[in-house]
Length: 317
Ligand SMILES: NC(=O)c1ccc[n+]([C@@H]2O[C@H](COP(=O)([O-])OP(=O)(O)OC[C@H]3O[C@@H](n4cnc5c(N)ncnc54)[C@H](O)[C@@H]3O)[C@@H](O)[C@H]2O)c1
Image (cartoon, rainbow, N blue to C red; front, side):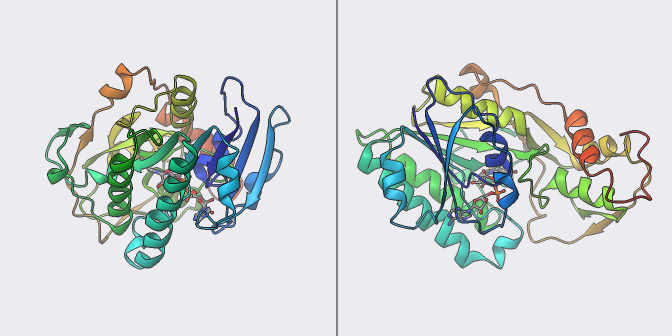
């Protein structure tokens, strides 16, 4: 089996390509336009897989032949910074909507199953625990980024399962955990970065006690391996969530390793989201499983950053 992974050099992709565990795997086609400059994700790839890297934009006509020669497409490429997406709305539209449309059209042309990564941010603002049955009228994406992901879900659901191609839509919680192509603009990772630097940890004014869904990076990669091995291309949506946490839970966990950091409360355009818990029950019933440990993965990331600041006490790492 050949697999095409778009956005393969990113936070998730760089971990996935080192931990792909798929039966009958032959070639792994890595597609990334290096928009985020993560060249380092290509260093020291494991010898036990046959990789081929294509420096390509997902909108380029050249990915036609890559998808044609693949048996499964894992679509990770996207503009992913939700807060910045208010300023970058045009780029978000081009990559997350037009780029996805191009990939979907090629999957339909060659009947290739597609794994699409959406986000639990499509739930946006909910009063209680939510699951995949939440009606579309109650989904409230709070940023151009989240809105583009909801657009993607609807695009795929409108086309998949009608004989041309099948798809799987994974609504992923915010990722925590180290990878070589890691990024630091989402909640857990940003707090770790700031604490490791000895900077003030910036928290949105309303966010401290609000609950949101998170996903460990190993759980995320396991979900992709499981989906491909079990052929879960049933054109349905699954929440992929390890646990729901408040920002206070996350800060308390970091404090176990770096006790002395201060917190500064700041404004954000997307902080008006309410607290919400996202259920992973449907995914559990389909055989997805979760074993990542927040404290362990925070410790690992802090350990990797251990030498960037000689003034931070490393005795707990
Ligand atoms: N990391 C999270 O917390 C999280 C949560 C929910 C959903 N997701 C989704 O999972 C997917 C992967 O996330 P990530 O954290 O690895 O993102 P990332 O930003 O780390 O990686 C995205 C990769 O896509 C590449 N890319 C961007 N535009 C491209 C284009 N036009 N053509 C080819 N490559 C392009 C970038 O260079 C980058 O390497 C995204 O679709 C994201 O929306 C991520």
